[in-house]
Amino acid sequence: MIIDGKAIADSIEQEISSKIAGEVFHRRPGLAVVLIGELAPSHAYVKMKKKGCDRVGINSYIYQFDENISEHDLLSTIQDLNGDEKIDGILVQLPLPDHILPHKIFASIDPGKDIDGFNPVNMGKILLGMSDGFCPCTPLGIKLLFEKLSIDLTGKNVTILGRSNIVGKPLAALLMQNSPGLNATVTLAHSKTKDLQAVCHRADVLVAAIGIPQFITREYIKQGAVVIDVGINRVDDPDAKTGYRLVGDVDFHSVFEKCSLITPVPKGVGPMTIASLLLNTWTSFRRRI
Ligand code: GUN
Image (tube, rainbow, N blue to C red):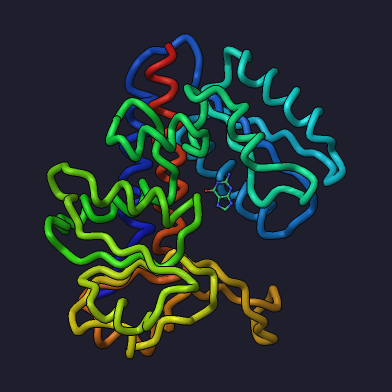
């Protein structure tokens, strides 16, 4: 069966929207998005985030900068946003230009406004199982997918492919947590993992987050496994209006018949990431008002 990530995300957005509209607040939640440079995918993601904010009633503020912005100027913008009362969430869109160190930028964001969950304080809280921080949006979206689909991970073998700070590492920490519905036995595989096919084949749940188009084929999949595809890759397609189409890290057609559940690309994990961003911004707003 195909998991309809879009429908699940829509239901979460509906809940957020009702909460925002359902009470009288003296202001709306506010999300600041910092966008640097001209990368087309980054601009597309920010546009989708802004549209999501519009749908649920969050005010979004886009701060756009030339790719030559100095680290100093970026840090000073973040300081301003940290002190800005109308802003509940600060998101600095990745990737950043080479001359700017992401760690330094994320460490400068007020942890209470760090709705991306990339500040070391919030990363630490995920590892410690503390729920008063913020969980990065894609891992949170995947956890919510399991919850909404009543998939209990207790004792299951979950293999995560990819050790990024955005997805792999925080997701591993989240799913291994001693908490109802989680308690997974997590394997974090990466580019240096030996016999990757065998490691993936053990998985009851396989999460692909390596950024290689259609890398995972049926040989990697255990019969009846749940497959979560985090990849969003642009591949050339002369027949498409845009000249490209989006594919995941999983070869959908090869894998589909062998797994029990699979997220498509698009309309799988992507909308859940956006819904989680809106949820984190709402959570921050509730904590701050
Ligand atoms: N670029 C790709 N994914 C993300 C994300 O989750 N947050 C930010 N800030 N940038 C990204």
